[in-house]
Amino acid sequence: MRERLSTLGFRLRLALTILALALFVIFLLQNTAAMRVHFLFFEADIAIAIVIVVTSLLGFIGGVLLALNWQRQRHKGQASKGLGEGS
Image 1 (cartoon, helix red, strand yellow):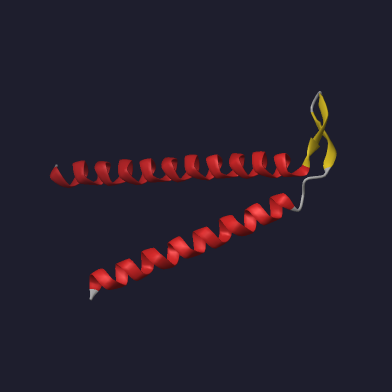
Image 2 (cartoon, rainbow, N blue to C red; image 1 turned 90 degrees about the horizontal axis):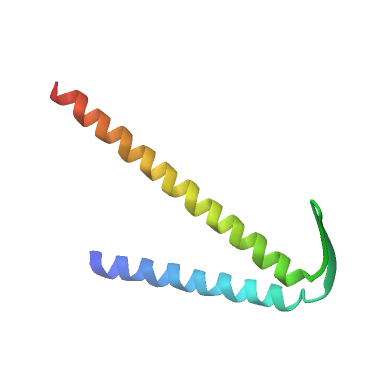
């Protein structure tokens, strides 16, 4: 029974991920017009879709780095707790 629930949960997450990616691609395809982008000393005419992809990737990478840092801090805290109990 537990295996079936985990498989059902996996399938649900997979379906939601595919749906989110499909919606993201549709959103990108509907935003292909060019726009002028100003960033510091940089200025260019870039497709809105490229701006969306770049900012999404930066956000994803930032989220992954924060999650890894949080996980590292959590393991570090558990290791120091384990050392303190043995003394």
